Image 1: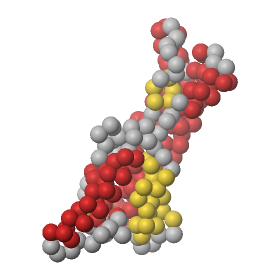
Image 2 (image 1 turned 120 degrees about the vertical axis):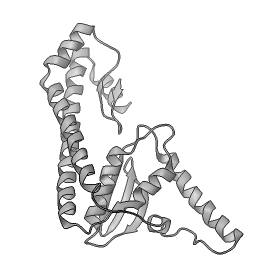
Image 3 (image 1 turned 180 degrees about the vertical axis):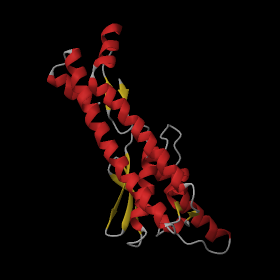
Image 4 (image 1 turned 120 degrees about the horizontal axis):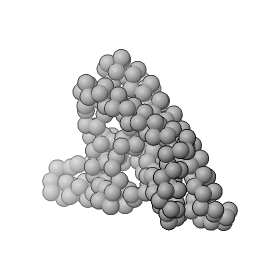
Length: 218
């Protein structure tokens, strides 16, 4: 089975004869459209990266991401309490970062949230009405590009979430927001095409409904 991050899959259960599968890949219009959409997705990410690369990046403090983090106090004991609290939060992030997880971000009533499989692992990050959409756009790009492996690191994710481009250039902000909206549309279109290919492959393999349900749940 071939699986996209977040659970989508479009090659299932074993292999049909090589020629049959090769012909399916070459002839099925959804396969060609899926390739086009993935190319457009990559082009959009490149478009965004070029623009974000022209503005200053600022790393927010840990308390911006974790507002109830124990404050850093003078003395060895105070620093130790702060460092332990921060380490526990990083460890919790690391534990949530499974290779198959789906990452996402939302902005509701001025509150940024970062999601893993639909569950907020970072929340209570409050931003202004002016800065919120641009910060959300950057978190959405991070959600789509953060590499999830068995060694995915919550500390690295934390720093990436805290590192945001300056919103001082309105032209860059406008273009990035438009590109991220287009990127979201591409992602939705890819999911539709993957579902279409799944259905065609289910038919190719002659799977019964119970077997199809099992594949979709796996």
